[in-house]
Length: 283
Image (tube, rainbow, N blue to C red):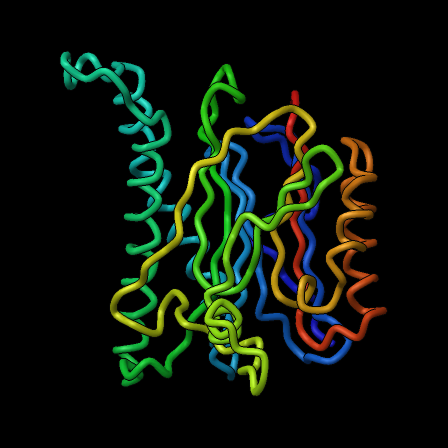
């Protein structure tokens, strides 16, 4: 089987929120790995993508959405930093309240829309503008580097059914909502004849428009954050993920990710498996 080629090296990375490690595996069934992940220390961003489209298009889509989003952030984040340094009073002296993450939320909306436009243009160029072209899920977190990581919220961004989890105080919480027909049916109260779990309501690339879920989250030291593709969360029970992440510390993130991937295989995973774990605290 071909070895997966992640966009970022599989080593411990130091972000403004703490330390992070990512790993990806082709899994026991697939012949190619259409997952990918990217950690950029300078930007303070970590993200995973799960591609789809067949004939290597999934690999192109997952790498394409990650690199396009990183490039957009690299271009526009400095202006956001300058704006934040000026403070709200410089822009609106009468303002009495401001969400410190509002600018980052707006920028991430624009970044995801930019990545979508690039992939959609590639689909159109191949005559696949009907929604049947290549695409990718996208889930990530961004906290721009700064001197006080816990004073500024982390911002998550999400399209599709990859997930972001947070372990705090021993309790694992899913911070993203799956954008799938299955999740929609559950929320509508359906109990019989549920759709397949992997039928996406949207992804980055197949359509001209995309509506990402972008939210801000206050962090506390020792929070454990996990990004993963459905190859992990679709196979491993919630309780086992929680128990595994409870063992996280700065020195064992590579072993922890390997353990999660091997657990997914043990539970019969039939998809590519990608996991990225970040431990909040001094980097």
